[in-house]
Image 1 (spheres, rainbow, N blue to C red):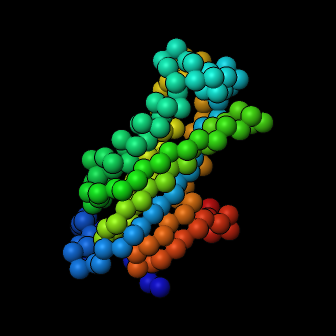
Image 2 (tube, one colour):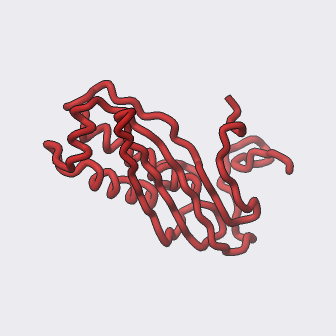
Image 3 (cartoon, one colour):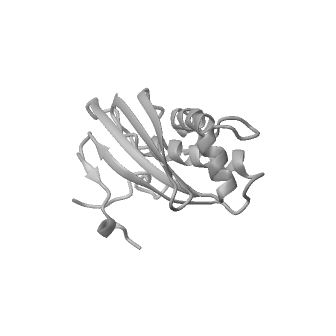
Length: 165
C-alpha cells in the first residue's frame, strides 16, 4: 500500500479529502490515554466527590462533546453524524492513574479516528482541570488509536512493535 499524505492537493496546499465518491459503511474507532495523579487526586476521582463534583462523569460528558465537535478543532476533519460516543474509565490503583477509552461509531464515508482521539484527550484534560487544585504535577500520556474498523483500509489494531519511535 502506498503511503501518501491525503490532506494536501497536487500543489502541496492543505485540502480536505474529497469523500463524495466513497461508499457509506459502518465504522468504529477506539482511542485510549492515561493520566497519572497523586493520592489525593486519585481518591477524589475514585470517590466521585471532588470540590468541583464527580470528576469522571464530568470528563465523560466533555469527551462526548469533544468527539462530536472534532471538526471545530481539527481544520480538515469532516463533520460526521456519530451514532455512538462512549467514554469508559479504568482506575489503576497500583500506579495512581486513570485510563480513558473513547469508542466512536458511525455509518459514513470516512472514519472516526480523530473523533475518538479528541474525545479521549478532552476527557483527560477535564480530569486535569478538575483535579489541579489537588495535584499540579499530573501527567497525561500514552494517547493513541487502539482500534479502528471499517472503510477501505479495513481493520487496525495497535501493537507495541508498530510504533515508529
